[in-house]
Figure 1 (cartoon, rainbow, N blue to C red):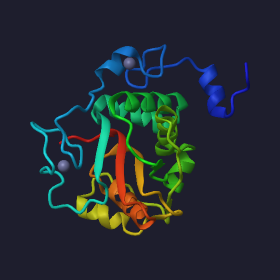
Figure 2 (cartoon, rainbow, N blue to C red):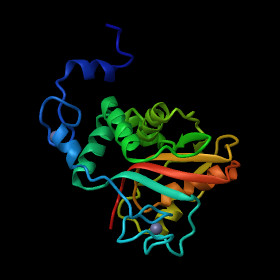
Figure 3 (cartoon, protein in one colour):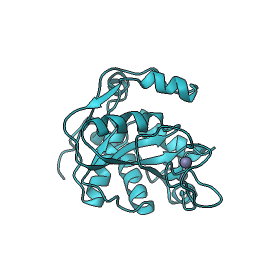
Length: 227
Ligand SMILES: [Zn+2]
Ligand SMILES: [Zn+2]
């Protein structure tokens, strides 16, 4: 057996696997919980991906908003089960959960027609605490599923206070100037992140990609908050 590449790898081998959602022993996400994650299916808003009663080009959630991406799609609804999965993924840094998330996204969403995948860069201060980068791990997993190159195209200029509990305007102010192009971006690119909440982070990072030369940015996330 080859040696694991990291301490995380060692722990993965030593500790019995618990389901990130229900804690039962045996798998990173058990079959029951995987089946109970709510897949996002059409009809959706073409622009922001919000589910609705019928397909629309703009919806109550995104109409009148300046959004720098062409579309946003997510695999599952960010409900209590998804929240538990994502928090285990972030706090415990389980590599298997990144793989589970990538497999689920590739199962639910069609491969985007883009030149490359990129990701929302991790917040340095929070990454140090967690020791890993979920958006990047998800993008790398999807790159393998979809056979697309993964490039670090966006750079973070500073750390950001937690967005939780902030209104849309405050979120936007909180994110002003945070993302800049890391280098020239291809004309079409897909931006990957773990969760879509208000779309403020996605639009700030997509703006940086547009400044870097992208003409069209599509966003893919693992989970999406649904009002
Ligand atoms: Zn479970
Ligand atoms: Zn919408």
